[in-house]
Image (cartoon, rainbow, N blue to C red; front, side, top):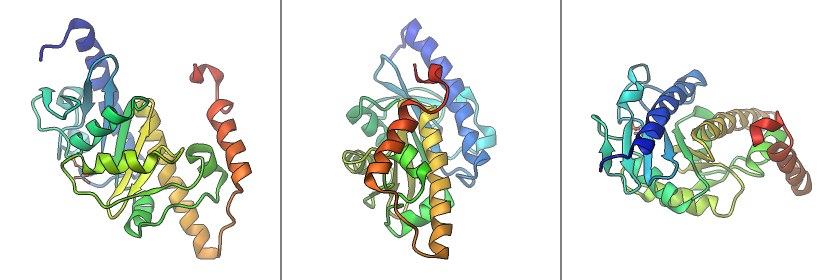
Length: 229
Ligand SMILES: O=C(CO)[C@@H](O)[C@@H](O)COP(=O)(O)O
């Protein structure tokens, strides 16, 4: 496939953005070695930009990012794409609202995934970002679209932008790749604090009504309004 000039320009910008966002994963302690990845949808094209498989974070460059179509076939790039390409392509095909997907093995959230237990909504920050519990998705094999199916099915009934895939780790989505990275960072923070609370005793759930109010406020009022335009 030959990219049109407009798409090629958009892809060049996304290569820079997706490469830069990868640096946030080790910075926030969400990954070890080459685990984890970030992808972004190419607006207006049936394409995505994703991390090359197995490349260390310090070696990632915009040029090493891989462009694939939404079937996971490489369209532009010198490296093999991430192991999660088929999974994330499935998400893009079935969730038109998703512009970015992130995968991490962040320790506290992944510990909850190992137990296949949702992170309960006992913190205002959980209500803010996830609108309730952080759900658990099914065990799914790596390399095909199984994980993608689990993500879409699990999130279908939830306001959460993150899902704990059983025995595996965190997958987070968002309107942009930056939003997805933010959800992954907050997922780990909430999982850690909730775990600590559990060590002290039984945490008190945030009521459903308060969860709704907190979620609406955070999604539509919090921060600088121009960010929301
Ligand atoms: O957990 C998995 C696949 O889901 C890891 O292999 C993944 O974190 C990293 O794989 P890639 O380097 O993106 O191919």
